[in-house]
Image 1 (cartoon, one colour):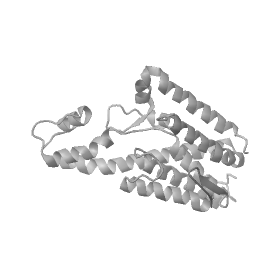
Image 2: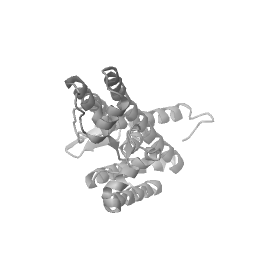
Image 3: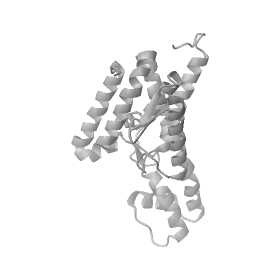
Image 4: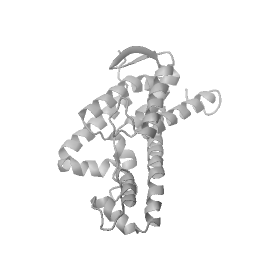
Length: 249
């Protein structure tokens, strides 16, 4: 069994402490509002949430599976790359996850918002309905459907280390392409070079269609894809330049 690496151990401890804070501080709601990542158009958004949401989790099982994956994939990656390079991938993947997920949210939000403006509603009216869940008198059926489409985006919040972990998984897969992995509920060994791209493709399909395969329906699938893509690009660059001044391993 792989011995847990030092940086991975410290990350797990921080995640557990943050989860305890979610359960105990301000009834949980206040702590969550402070540190979960909210949609930037929402008043609850704060810039520090771009980082702090990576240490937040929505429940015990969410925390357990993410920390299990962090130990399983993170430790071997850190043992090879070292703590500094490991952390670079970890946080870069988390930021890549944020960029793609928020970009996807804006892709959904902006056309509907502009359509509501063109239809005769003003920004104050739209903001009131999005923040209070109350529909103003005179709103048409078409406007109501547009509001429904952006309500979930406007009030979305993102938590979890999944984006970071997808980057670490991509790094693991590039370093150990023939390692055999299994899903808990599908105990069939699959080589990492097939397993990890397969998970990423399923996340991409889920993000586009809304159809969930293995994760809860409220999962930020595009964050998974963004994290994995970032981890892959970093590892690809390092490997490509391993014999020049940019060499990392």
